[in-house]
Length: 84
Image 1 (tube, one colour):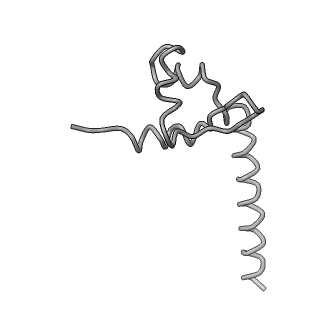
Image 2 (cartoon, helix red, strand yellow):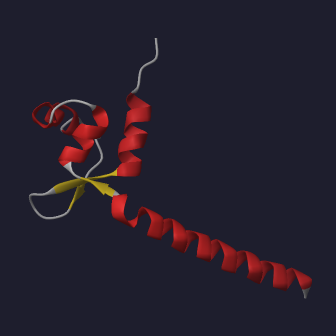
């Protein structure tokens, strides 16, 4: 009986945490080309060299418009950062 109560509490708590996480990230999940340029530093004109690299993450919003998932861009940066 106690195990069931603990299980129900944990399930409810995790579901609520996921809802809150999704809500907090709702407005900044996807980045525009300009936002990626601002994040990485180069101008918008030169950011295409980065955005067109094989494996750079994007999401097609329309047939011609790409957006970039913030978490995937951060992961890509981490994976492609070289330390000397």
